[in-house]
Amino acid sequence: MSTWIDRQLSLQVAYRIADEVSSRPVGDLFNAMDRFWADRHLLTESEREQRSEAEHRLSAELDRRSIPLRDPAIEAAAIADIRARILPAAPDLETPT
Image (tube, rainbow, N blue to C red; front, side):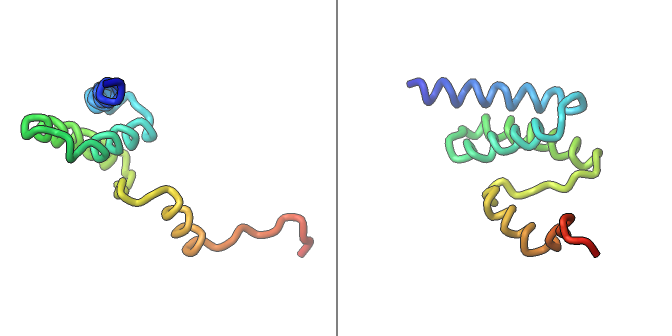
C-alpha cells in the first residue's frame, strides 16, 4: 500500500511542477518528466491524457529555454559513457607545457 501512496505523492509533485514550469529549475522539469515516464504503463486512459498535457507543458518550457530533451529511458551511466566517448579528455593541469 505504501508503494501506491508513494507513487501518488510523487505524481502529485510532478503535476505541481508541470503547473509551475516557468518558476522551476531545469532539474525539476526533467525529474517530473522522468516520473511521468516511469509510471506510463500504470495509468488509465484519463490519467494518460493528463500526463500528456503535463509533459507538453514541461517540453514547451524546456524548448523555450533552448534546452534539448533527453530520452528518460537512457540511464545516467549510459549518458556518462556517451559523454566520455564524445567529449575530449580534460587536459592535465599539473603537467607544464
